Length: 66
Image (cartoon, rainbow, N blue to C red; front, side, top):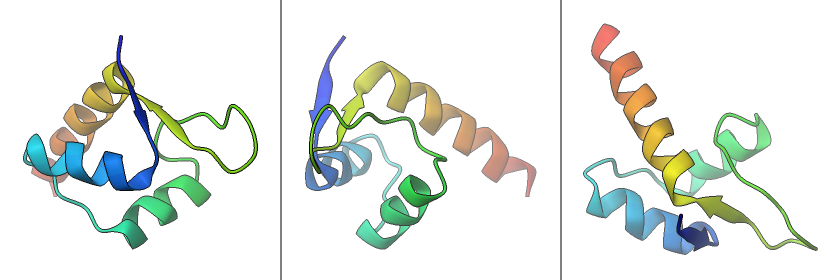
């Protein structure tokens, strides 16, 4: 189970799997608690790669229904 540290690294990862988002979109998802993440200490944000893969799949399914 891999970890992705920080929003910049998440943006790179999402681009690599064909689900590009902007930093603003990520921040909105974080504020609304709509993207799986953890804050182990301070302002550090960590994303679990398996959870992000699942989340992207769910987003794609939701997007296809629109």
